[in-house]
Image (cartoon, rainbow, N blue to C red; front, side, top):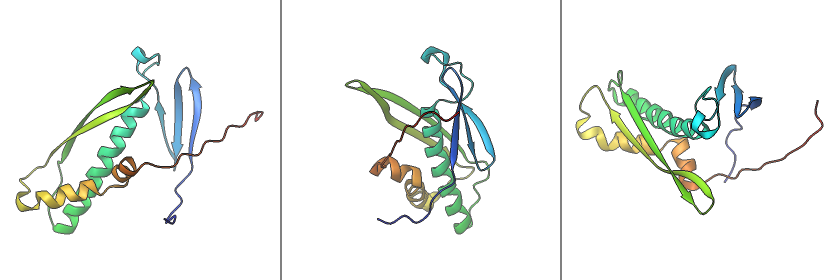
Length: 141
């Protein structure tokens, strides 16, 4: 397995409570937990973002397929719901259900659209897992 591309730096900065600002390629947004999870609900939760990233990735791959196949995907809408499960003392997302509504019946191209959605980077990462290296340092003020 070789690295094909190193991605842009993503910087997270603690704002207050459980809220962090995230900055990547000039985009900035807040991530927080809902109030019932001791946050202030200033933005989506990390789990919301993970499910959203999965949906957006799948949608983009379907849109690319539509462009290549000469199909319109304008007006495509995706709805996602996920559930959390508890395993021993750890929580994780157990399932993500994705409903895709297209502006037209895909007919015989439905299988190809499903293959496109299933081939996105985020889904592949969730399926195979990713190595996560963490380093903590201090005294930087």
